[in-house]
Amino acid sequence: MSLWQAVGLGAGPSLAWLWLLWRRDDHEAEPWPLVALAALLGALATAGVLWTRPLLETWLVPCSPAVDAFLLTACNEEAWKLAALLPILACREVDEPLDGAIYGAAAGLGFASLENVLFARGGADAVLLLQRGFTATLLHAASSGCLGFCWAEGKLRRWGRGRVPWLAAGLPVGVLLHGTYDVFLLGEQPRLLVSLLVVLPGGLALLALKMRWGRARSHLFHPPPS
Image 1 (cartoon, helix red, strand yellow):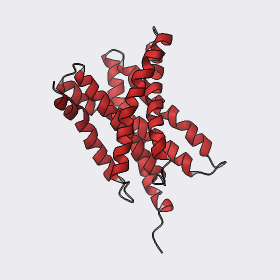
Image 2 (cartoon, helix red, strand yellow):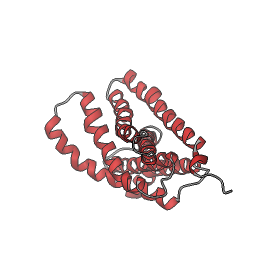
Image 3 (cartoon, one colour):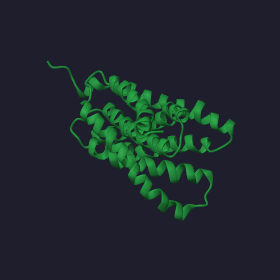
Image 4 (cartoon, one colour):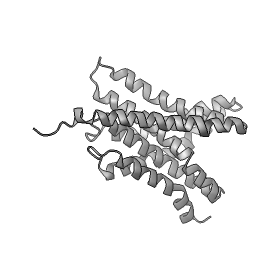
């Protein structure tokens, strides 16, 4: 598979999902360049994962499937995506919780794009890449979107009004969703179906609920001009 084919099949689905997600922010749409930057930073986070995973494996391998799924993969990847997302979350544009979900999902889709391209260059065929476009790619968007929502909610709250719990919940929520998906994915076919038919739809539903809740509260952060 050529490089351009790998990029098209690996990143194409992510770009389509990102556009659909961005359109959901119809009250005060986020600037497209900043959304693209979040995706780019998410893609760059793969470099951090490629650096730290071998280090973790020297300490933890051999390990159980649960340790592999939750620590080596989910915690490692979500921590790097959060690190990539922090400069965006600090921007003034993040002025409502819904924004955190948008930028978080964008970072997750950027991460998934480059991950898919690396899979393609490593020998994955077109069928596998298209399957990942509707499974692992969406899992990254859901886990990082939920993480970003929690951090934006925490950022906008005052100290003593729930800021710390929301910030503290962000990474564990992303890791729990991501790790649960992976731990079932590592098993036999019946367990794999749990990932695809239960965990993934559940994660997407959680992100959708958070975005719906955020959209319903948008007018509190952007009151109409008097």
